[in-house]
Length: 174
Length: 274
Image (cartoon, rainbow over the protein chains, first blue to last red):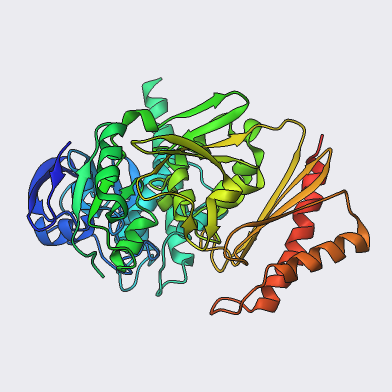
């Protein structure tokens, strides 16, 4: 049973977007700050710091997670995914990201990393979402630019694109 | 804001967690999903000297049926209970209320027992536990005890938990044949309820529980009232809750919600009664 003392920095290791990373943190350090300040992964944004705005949402072991309501030391050994991991390769956007660009799903972009993580996770398990379901999912995010409508439009289009590409893959396998 | 400094203990067994609580008492806090406690730490409304993380204790992540009750361990996340295939059959009220608990992004981490331990007056899980006459299973290095949910929550974010105790599990009795209704009003789906109502219609009559108005969930039991008798009972209950004005709603609006959605959930529960 390790006891990590308050005033010292302790080694924290986990996988970030598939790659092993390591840094050091006092027990009180939020995962959001660890990502940004220790690892330089500034794609994750920090808004309200009490779990309401959703800007800092990431995936920890497949679970949507507010990285401001999670300590860095809690995710030692876990699998962490952030917005930096969404694009399939450098210079290419994911289907969801491309749909956001096409539909102006972002303006200032502050909320976008969290919104993308939520939608990416949701669409991976719910390939045919209704608009109501997406609106309920987005209730966990605050966006002050878009009024959400273009975000919904982008997500619905991404869902349709992903579903049709899955169907095509299925038919080629027949 | 950032939390004040604390030690962090990752407990591998329940005994280890209880030993820290026995040694540190009120200076220690259990952290499970962290969806309430972390916000309190960030705002420095809570300043424990040591946090005890119980999420790597495998035994606590358990949903089980035992002697006519559903037992939910301290490690069970809200999303896990919501996804449990038997939830709607065994605990219909919880199946109705849990989608209103926070957001998809917080239910994925937050635990059922953590919500009970936090005892926010507007929270859905304590409301359901009290409405269903559930129990809180407490454990310390010295002893185990079981407290009725209605006695466990003593006020706003106040509970009967002693400093050296932790919630090991909560349990909900299974009652076949009852009808249930749940509804709440909040500014945004998943936000703190301005008012939440849960109704149970049984062979004995109706039971209405209300959160978000008084400093803890309050309950009334009535026979099968109808018409103006039901209106009168709801009106009296609404006033007895001693609603206050705050930034979100006036006391009068809250009383109105108790009367309106209280009636709706009672009717819904009756329609579902076997």
